[in-house]
Length: 178
Image 1: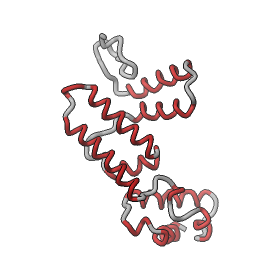
Image 2: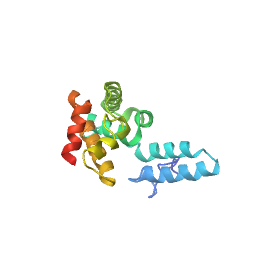
Image 3: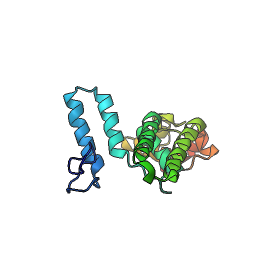
């Protein structure tokens, strides 16, 4: 179809232009409107919105293992895996102009996700070896407890060396933050 008619999510804001810088925002809005009309269940509606808004996964070196582990925290394993699959399909749909190294980069991100999951790298505060009770014992109260647990999680996620996955290391980290 002509560019001014556009595809869902790739509506042209200027006649003759196929994609816009904010096509993911436009696509997400169109999805939400259609999903509401179709009475799509809320969880599915939210998951698809997340995929559409975040599908422009970079295939450059900025998106590496640390990015993947942080996205596991933000999205969870299942949705992150779906996001990477969506991006691979999006790239494949562009045809011959897509370099194989871009698809290889997406595969490397999925491999990093699986590796983190299999290695037991936490995907959330609840996966840490320490709890809010440990933070209280370290002298933290109120919102400082959640902030400290998130800080420990980010430290572990960014550099999941074997010792950082232990309860002892995480207790020490909490003590530093108290």
